[in-house]
Image (cartoon, rainbow, N blue to C red; front, top):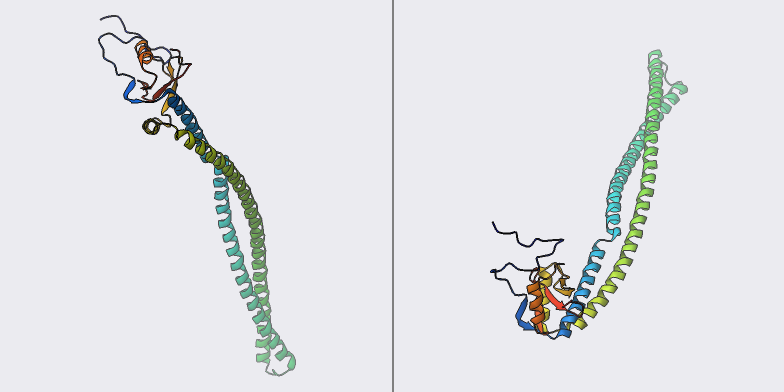
Length: 277
């Protein structure tokens, strides 16, 4: 077994390519653009990155999660409020019915008492039955009044629950309104900056050759939003890998108008005064 080839250190590729192996060229021979146009492509890339950041910030505003959580709380509270209102309404009907029953028994007892007091009933047996009925009605009235009191207590409890839940619903709704206001204010600021950056991008992009811009947009879509990268100190700032000796020599030999591509990430590689060539 022969000696081991160059090893990768700290994410770098070997600077020397093993002999006898062919390599892909990093330039795009069919595409040329003035160096100034290629530099402006980096300006467009910086603006596109900013637009991505603004879009991410818009999606990631803390108010989104806050509003979502508050809306869940509001839904639960409203459900509880509806249940409490339903219980209060049921108790109100039950109380009305119980009070009507008490009133009917009371009226009947009053009639019987008047009949008894009038002396119209002379038969001892009828008098006994009438007195027994009056006693029974009094007991019945007492039982029904107890029912009324019990229903009134339940209704009062339900009313207190309704009042409490109504206040809590109002409080949560106020928090939602506040968070929504803060979110909308952030939207307005972010959307304003986005519009400004978009306009600036349109202006700069309009000065770049269409074929170069088309390639850039295609690569940007394929490469996670970055289609062009600066060559800085012999390192592609797109993939952060250093060019090997062969690639550096190719870059040096290439015409300034030649549009280069990084061999590793295939992004457009833009040369500047800081490329280290």
